[in-house]
Image: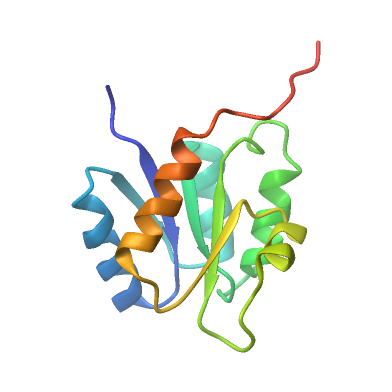
Length: 131
């Protein structure tokens, strides 16, 4: 069985590195991007199994990337977890209004993050296909 691939999108190198290291310990293959443009390109090309997406990133905010992914028939099945440490604490309903599958606040607990990831990666797909 191949490793699950997770794209981590964050413009803070330290957060990107630490999160990547934590998730590699759980045997995930990690892809990274530092801005919205690169994130969407990686999502289109690599079709990761899950995206961990910072809300505030350069070029296109996480909310815009989330909306673009969830409105694309070829990508909408990819689970997205939004996260941020800026401003107000986002509630699940607000994150879901952007199309996100879940939300976590920074700094996040590694166990809480991996639990959310595992739940989303093992959940049955709910996307409908059309003939």
